[in-house]
Image 1 (tube, helix red, strand yellow):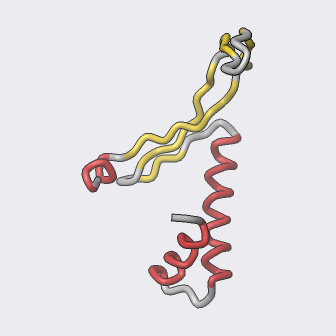
Image 2 (image 1 turned 30 degrees about the horizontal axis):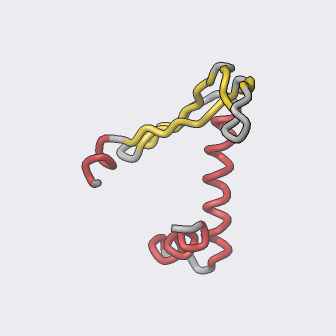
Length: 90
């Protein structure tokens, strides 16, 4: 499902009047999730799952083209853990 399909589905399912309202709602939800994760928080949506950030340490890797050893810097990634209801529905 693409973002456009998600917006159309949200409009129909939530009974919103326009696609603009549905798109605004999607954008606000995404912004809230991103802002919370950026500030180091986590989000738990009961029955769906949780989002949290995890730190990845710096490590050594290899350039697949040349075989040369490279240094991969430390980074922060987002981890999603599905909730029990979501797991069972799949």
